[in-house]
Image (cartoon, rainbow, N blue to C red; front, side, top):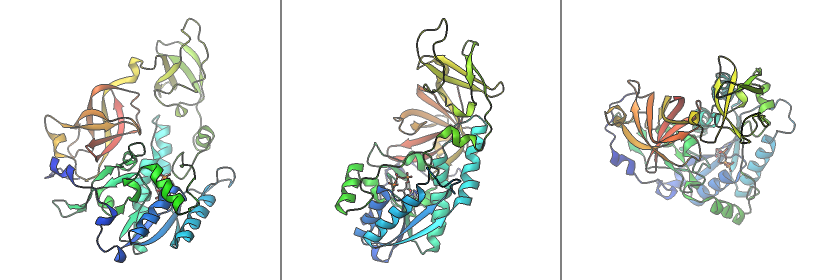
Length: 398
Ligand SMILES: Nc1ncnc2c1ncn2[C@@H]1O[C@H](COP(=O)(O)OP(=O)(O)OP(=O)(O)O)[C@@H](O)[C@H]1O
């Protein structure tokens, strides 16, 4: 990572790339990630309508252990195949289960074990969808890949060192914007990707699917962890990590119950703490305030905005800047004034970012307003206007 960027604020105003801006669609091969969901189905239709040579690729990245209730992959593949048959495109399949395990899942477990709350979908996008998938698509002759993410990208531009990159931009549908999950994907990869539904609102996407009589038109949006899906989280995690029960202790040091393992709890969490009424305490909800790893204690308190849950500064590490170069302003005395989200769906928060390492791979962030439940392991993601600059993993807060 170098810091000698000539990048200035004007560069954040590059226009979004539309499908109609791509030259020679008839000579351009696009491989779409077909998940068996409505967004990728409509992406394929839009690419086809724009005149591209379109092919689909379904990935299977998780091997079912029991092949029973959670096994939706076969159903998703069948839906992806049905959509491809309907619109007349070829569907390839690939299995990246080994890559997913090595590059995403092991890290996910290690983070839980260290008391943090990781976001595997971010790593999955970086390591699988925009690496393993992209590399494979290139072997199929792809000029671009496409996904059904609700994000946009700018036109390409050339960095000082000659690398062709594009900005990652928020999806037009504010409710669905997925740029938070894609912030760790490099701009060189974004430059090779098309996001056909990024310019649309979700109801419009469903309307297009219905108009084309696609089997996925009414399919419900996927939830749960990428590729692993929706499971009873506690049972799932227990298969891989030993649970270590311990005490639940109040913020003033009184033991009031037992927890079944710190990894099952998230800072700021209200439900599921398993504490009923506590003697001499008001009948108010309890919230997780801290995980004390060294004593294996879960520290709880009352009040949604308990002072232990509020912080105005954080440190983030493993920064991934979309441009692959840290913005010069983070090295200046004034820092970089921008917007941030410390979790998906959080409204933008105004902040200033300062480099905390020579290469900008670690930063300190100072928010204008105190933030609730900043959670180590989750990501802080930075924006200027429509452009997502990148982000890093939250290490600590104060
Ligand atoms: N198993 C898969 N095989 C190929 N591509 C996939 C797969 N899962 C996800 N993708 C790609 O990543 C995009 C975003 O995936 P995500 O899991 O967020 O689904 P989504 O937003 O519900 O989209 P969709 O409605 O297409 O499932 C998908 O639209 C698709 O292009």
